[in-house]
Length: 253
Image (cartoon, rainbow, N blue to C red):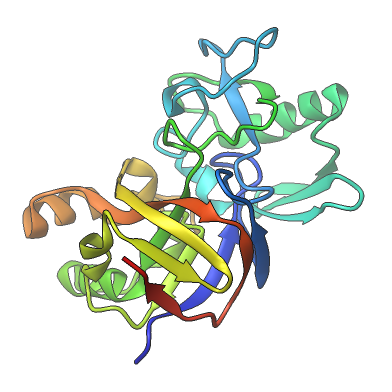
């Protein structure tokens, strides 16, 4: 089977919701449009609202400490600059993420499903022209569905591939073949990307996207079976272009 792009996902607010799309136009040096554009700074975050810029993941609320965040789904409307959030235990909420009042309303909305975290959500933030990726550069993540199935075999049951919160879910590679691509350049659709490094994982992957409960030892299984806790790879866009589901994956160098 030829390696191809099976699914495209974006996460407008870091760790708070996911949305499937069927196509996207990527820009050189940028993260995916509308992906991790916003984040939720917690009460001890060092994020500087006067001089906003990229901050490391530890400055934001994440599913590693609030597993129920895994259940959030969302729907964006770029034309109207709005995002609607859905969670089984909360009423649907539509906000304009650029509006301070709406951002405060979101903090109140997410607070009940964040209780139990060491640090509670405090502010809805963003940085001009920089997505809040988990890397210090503007990245896109790629997950190999064959590797996911191999891990399911180790776990002895099926789990959702949405646990990984990847942007590109690909099929047709051999299990763990994605790690062999590190250092290479690949083409998907009209866009070209450098494969930079593996994605190191946190406890958010232990949480079930349907129930919001930790029910799979993803990290322990990865370490025991493979000697690491990596899953997926990070990409940097080196040539702008349009990408859509079904596009083949070509290794250029």
